[in-house]
Amino acid sequence: MAGPTVTFETPENVQVSYEPAGLGTRFIAWFVDSLLLSILMFVIFVAVIAAGIMTSEVADFLREYLGPVFDKLLDMLGQGEAWESGPVMQMVFWAVYSVLMGFSSFLYFGLFEYMMDGRTPGKKWLHIRVVKDRGFTLDAGSIFLRNIFRIIDQITLLWIVPVVSPKSQRLGDMVAGTLVVRDKPRKLSRVREELLARPQHAIRFPLDGAQLARLDEKVLQAAEQYLDRYDDLSAEQQEALALRLSASMAQRMGQEPPERGMALVFLVDALSQVFKRRARRLA
Image (tube, rainbow, N blue to C red; front, top):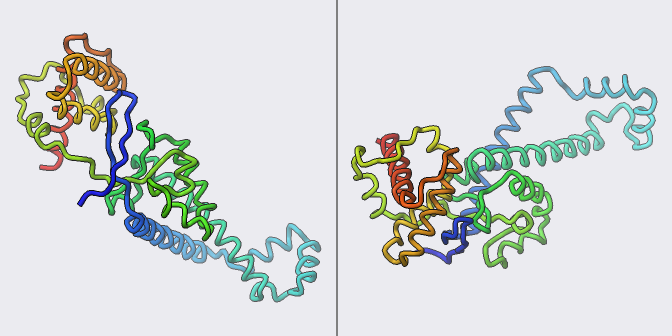
């Protein structure tokens, strides 16, 4: 059974609906990503030890460059020469570990979400992803903000925020204007079947793979939903939306927008070629 949906209007004036990801699904995705990150950090830790960077060597380094200041600090803490194995060293270790984990977590989630269009390995496995909550393309600034706020969102009292949020947003999502949704948008099988069945010789606007790769999922989904609803629109709406969508697609591909009477043909041709290329890769 499908859950509640969030609907917003894209810059092309086409409504797109998403289903917010459940908190349980998000937790499992986060757990998977955290496990992968911990494994990566463990491998790095072992590699560092294998390279000979030991605690005693760190102590010698600090003594060499800080001199008497270092020993005086240890004496003040009551540790002296036993700092490598005492409570101070344990605190230093956990402090460094916490900083490294926080920084690594920021890099892990931030880079993956940026490079994989709002997905991380955990999110991809659970079929969820991050999107903008206003219909715009997910940008680097939003990814940066939502991941910086992970530090604050780890405060126990703030765990209630996504529970009471209508869109299941954590504080970082609210500040960045993002939300996590199920990565299974409504399938328009009739439209796709018709586009895949369209003969190659009927294509008036042949496009190469590099051009088609510049079309992001949001504009493709908006165009697909437009074609699915085409018969329910008035003639004015059909023409206006075809012009907007085709112009947006042409701009992304670095092409001149099609002439007024060819906007719908351009739209159909572009979608047809995208779906045919994907079908060939899956075959």
